[in-house]
Length: 272
Image (cartoon, rainbow, N blue to C red; front, side, top):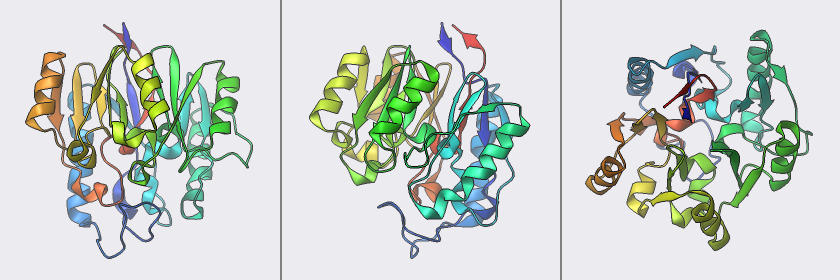
């Protein structure tokens, strides 16, 4: 048995644009094609819905162009929502919008200390009975201890070591209870060792695959949604009984995000 997402939260890209530079992918000189971005977002939403995922929507704010990346909103465990404390001022306005949304949905909102930087599912992912947490660029390692205490769940902390992979979900993707994609070049030696310790069948990706955001993937059952997959990765995933569904996210990669960045998992039912 493995956890199914059941539902996800997405935010329409009505206000999406590249207005500032807070990671190495972003350049105000390399703007997203907004009509194409809207089509790509709708294609991802439709692809998820065809796989029976229920997509809930939050209203975008014209002042928050990165709100489309809902994975960074916070972390959900049962009916508890832990909102993010964004590192950069440019995104801090999103926090209250997501808190208000989950309050309206009757979630219990548990806030971290304001001094602790934490960016939700961007840096905290469930894998089996533990949480895998990334820290360095956006989240503080101390936030992992706080989340662990709130949820009574063990957090395995991995230090990120490559600024292009500033969030854990850009370089690590749990697929099921045995498999996870990861990019070795995004972690220090200790982090890579921990991945191999806790993931029974880790699948390393190459540098070109990582820079095509292959690890910023989202899995529904045995279907792995990602921007692009090489023939090599397609073969490996097929041997592990996964099906790859490619969903182009070129306009969002310009801001450093892809498939997983645009969905926040809302834990649901269980499936085999």
